[in-house]
Length: 393
Ligand SMILES: *[C@@H]1O[C@H](CO)[C@@H](O)[C@H](O)[C@H]1NC(C)=O
Ligand SMILES: *[C@@H]1O[C@H](CO)[C@@H](O)[C@H](O)[C@H]1NC(C)=O
Image 1 (cartoon, protein in one colour):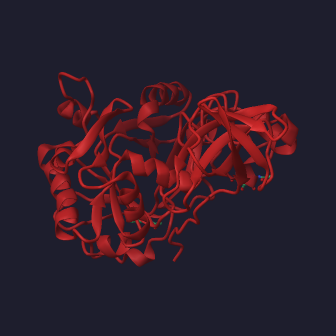
Image 2 (cartoon, rainbow, N blue to C red):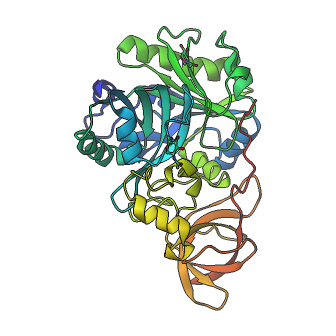
Image 3 (tube, helix red, strand yellow):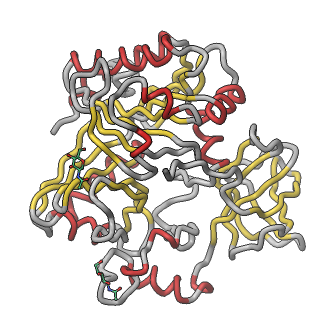
């Protein structure tokens, strides 16, 4: 499959790519910025960042995530390939279910984080980050050369619908009983006003209940339908639904304790250092099954914590927010790491942040971050900072 959509929507002057929903963002007064090479809305007219954030925690927010890259893996050995490039155990993943995992390099470092969905024993769907698309595709092509695998990528409309009212809203557009689709499950279904089958995944990046819809948009007709669907959600339910930009997306995922590639995840960070040890299932820690890239380093870090030179931690603070790159100090003044993300927390008050410290620190430990030459106190805290409300049925 091709990258028809982004090519067709590519803007000549700026060289930035546009998603199928670009026109909708402009109509809604979206303030467009360059995000991973795409023109994406950071905030919409008539809403502050805090209002957008609180709206998602209390009602429904729509997020255009069409800049992410979608992959299909078929052929005779997609499982063998995916279990080499990620630590997932596909034997235990039920059909039509998905899981977060990470693409790993030879040293156990994270090339990207991704969601893999099993549609059949030899049929997998994956979504990766926009900012990593070039290196991800190169990496996957190189690895796939050693397997009998048919790998393709495609783009379309990817729409995240998030918030406590998300299921009630979406139920108005489909005959499928959404109460039967729990967190992590997926289904192809019909949505009113959209001709093609839509891939629905009950998942999200805010900690709220919600869905991610993959709506085919490779023809002008399909793109028009996805735009009309987006518009009708907002126009028909103005008291329930608002479009939400990148600013609130970041503060929501931070409160939910989730990682953002390029901040908490990078090629010199292993999933163990990122405190994502749960991504390596027990069955893959067995020597015989540990065939994924970087397994020896990752398994040794699981066995011996002191082999991690850094650990991801959560922080709470008051006053000016910690920011990416701020240095982190222990109470006795020793430099112990740095902040990777920080934001005021509309839900909790004060600030939430993530950082790397030279070792795991206990909740309640007092640390300091340096912001504009001044050291400010922060307290180590468990993540998620705001309790997740995934729908488990
Ligand atoms: C998976 O979902 C598809 C539709 O999305 C359905 O046709 C199929 O029966 C499902 N398979 C299982 C094992 O649930
Ligand atoms: C190895 O992986 C297979 C398939 O997931 C699993 O059934 C088996 O239990 C694993 N072996 C060990 C020792 O965990």
